[in-house]
Length: 194
Image 1: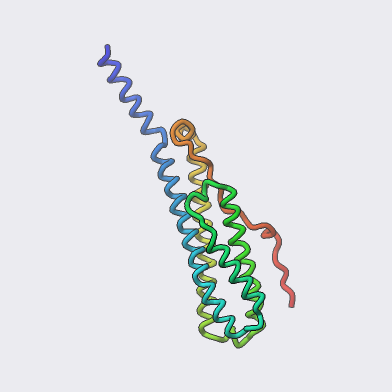
Image 2: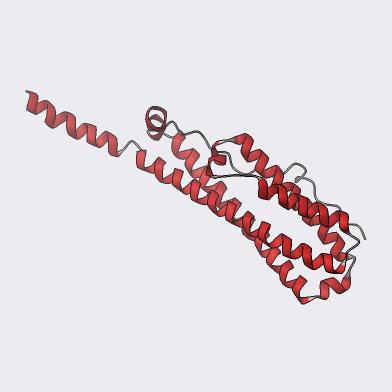
């Protein structure tokens, strides 16, 4: 009887573990962490380019110190913010990260307005090269955010659907992840005035 019970219980237990979603959840969790790493790398690239851009602009527009200082300070705040992969489990840290990046984006926008005032700066090859690098980096940031949000969507779905939800509830207890959200005021189109 004991042997018969082992022959029945063991295969059922094995089948239950195979279909429990443990590996799927782990795979999706790793995908979220990897996607977050891509987001961080894109932001780091932007932070690395900004000092070069500011130096080129400084050479042409020394009296625009306030704007250049704002860009430098915003970049410094982003650099001081110690964010690791644990931010994806902490909505408050994610919000702080997005706020710092938003202030940097705002400062860069003001810098581009300063650039518009100096046509000879826009014609400078060094500046144009840096500007193209920054535009490409902003595109990379957007792509990385989209990929992160997709990985978060897949992960969140995997921990909320049956039978994975039971595996997560009783074994893993991984929290739902927060995707990137639009910055405050993004729903309004910017006003263009000439």
